[in-house]
Image (tube, rainbow, N blue to C red; front, top):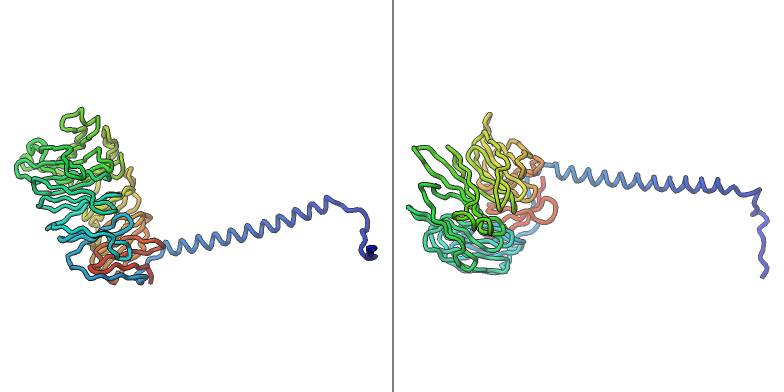
Length: 397
């Protein structure tokens, strides 16, 4: 069929292709500019919303979920892996975050203490002779000591070092997870003092111990490092480094990571580095009374008595000794911990949460007697362990 021509559709003159190209470019730039503005506005809205959420202080909580289970009132709780440990004199239970029992291990422990590592935790009977090592799947091993237990520390492989009580000659013994003695150290009270704190590195290769002694009525502390690898085997008693502290008590020592360790005194804290050989990295003086100390693999923190007025101060330091925050708080809390980027404080139903930027995220009432508080998935959501209940809550006003 023959095509019809539209007599009104005609070109008037020649086509200027350069003009068309410029018009196309202007159109593209206009469209791109509009999308850029939309993206920037959306990003500003998201950022603004995030900053409002992060910088807001909440005063109450709302229950998102609750799981009750009748238990005895002597239970204690502590976070481990992706769940919660519930322990008492009669046994150890690993719970998921819905308060469901993943496994139960009966035992008879009169005065339980717990030490938790990333993949392993240990429970010991203070004054007794039993140490039990657990992993996520259940019991890993059991140790029976010949002397009463005072303190323990467990590595991520399940190696346990314990301070064993003996009035004249206390011992520090390291065991594997099934109870075989790996290293035995007889403490000489005259030369070192009495061991009051210890911590193992995650790989079980190094042990840090704080000793306390009195000479001529003066307190003296010594921090000692032991290496159980090749370097330590070449040294007497595996001892690779010591430092003395005159007129000072060093009640806590710990490893932050594989090569960073810390000794906390009553007037300062010292950061060390090294494993095969150890050296002092820095010392930070604290001019206030320490009420409590807490730490993670990133931070060292303190609750200090405010020296100028009533109340307390929270100070947080990184592993180089640099102060991250210093802010005032009111109220007293029997439990203080750091989890991720948050300092979590609680005492009964009272709670307070401060971020590692110094923002007070929460100060109020949990609505339950809290025995443990654990950050949960989501923004400002927490798992609260009570005597017979696990609650998932979120912060609100």
